[in-house]
Length: 152
Image 1 (cartoon, rainbow, N blue to C red):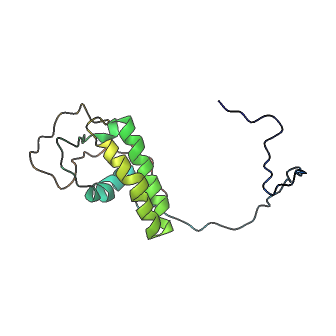
Image 2: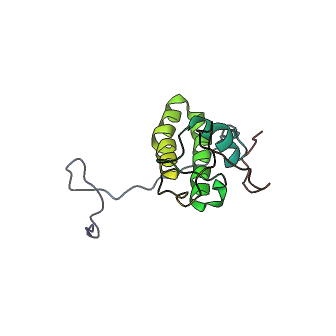
Image 3: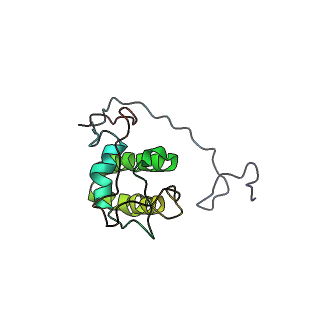
């Protein structure tokens, strides 16, 4: 492991060997109110059913696995909740951030989540021989998910 010697952690970017001590800056609190950013979906389950799965149509079988009770799988629960909350945050930043969301988060994580060696690898094969419109899901018990602010 490479360590920085004690006392040499300041950078001299302009070539001046007489580096000054770092200045302490204080940030004053302002009374600027952040605009309200209500959630569009009340929880991860609603986001998955209404937004994510209708946009992620894949054929179940040799390349993809899924469990309708996805919420019982801790890895799936965590990833889908993180995807929902990230989407809720990034949607306020405009179309470019939505593209970043798909590129950096949605596709890589959904592909990993539904991979044959992903969290659903041991789930029994689907009973539907044809491609469903979306992955089958069951409703989670009431109150299972934390609720988003101001979601309808």
